[in-house]
Image (tube, rainbow, N blue to C red; front, side, top):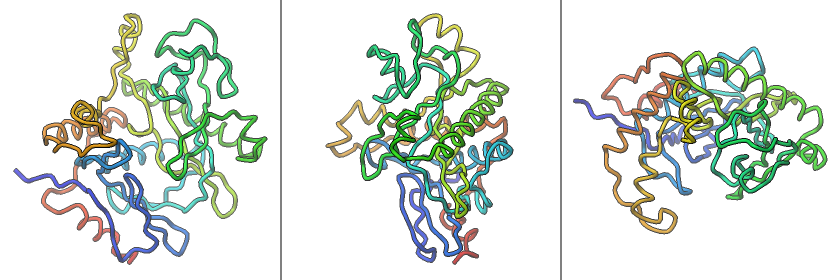
Length: 316
C-alpha cells in the first residue's frame, strides 16, 4: 500500500513575496495576482499540531464548488486552479471586518450569540433576539454578527453596523454591499446544503477591494473549517431531546491532545496515525456531502510539493 504523504509545508523559493499563514502559503506576483497554496496543516492552540492528508485539497475544492455556485451573486477573487491545492486569485485589500452570518442560536466562543444569549443578553451586534430561544434553535431569520478582524494575535471583537460605519471601518455603501452579498450567499448556501442533507447553521465571509474599489469575496466560502454544518435528518429529534446537533466531528486530534497535556504550555505528545487517518476521512466525507461529488485524490506516489512545484513552474 502506497504511503499517503501530507503537505506539511509549501515553501517554494522561486516564487516571490512569500507569506506563511497558519494553513496557507501565499505568494504575491508582480502583476497583482496572488498564489494561495492550502497545506494539510491542522492549526490549533496557536500552532500547527499535525498534518492531515488531503485536508488542503478538501478545503480548496470545497471552496471551488461554492465559488462556482455563487458567482452570480457577487464577484470573487478566483482566477484559476492550477493544482488541487492551489488557487490563483486577484490580490485584494482585505476589509477590516469579518462578516459572520448565523441562522441558528449556536456557538461556543465568547463572541457567539449562544454564549451571549445564555449570559442574559438580548441586544447584540445591533440585533435584538426574542426571549425563550433554546440552544441550537433556528432564528426567526438569519442575522449578521460582524467582528473586527484580529491582527497580531489580538482577539475578534463584536461590532454593529452603526459602529462599523461611525468608526470608519467601512463606508455606508460598503457595509450595505457586503451585508447584501453575505445574506444572499448564506441563503444560497443553505438551499444547496439542504439538497445534500445538511443544515448550514452559520459561516463567515471575508471581503476585500480590488484596484478599482470593487468589493470582492476572498479567502474561502462554506468550507468545513469556516462553517458550521449539521446533519439535517437527525436535527429535529436531537433538538427536541435537548442534544447537540450531529455534525462533522473533525476534533479527534484536538480532543486527544487536550486530554493529555496543556497544549499552550507543554510539549505535545506524538499523535497516533489512527487519529490523523480518522480526521482525514471526516474531511473527505465533508467534501462529498457538501458538494455531492466523489473525492478524487491525486495520483499516489508523488510528493505533493513536487506536484505543486511542477504545476506552478510557469510562475517562476
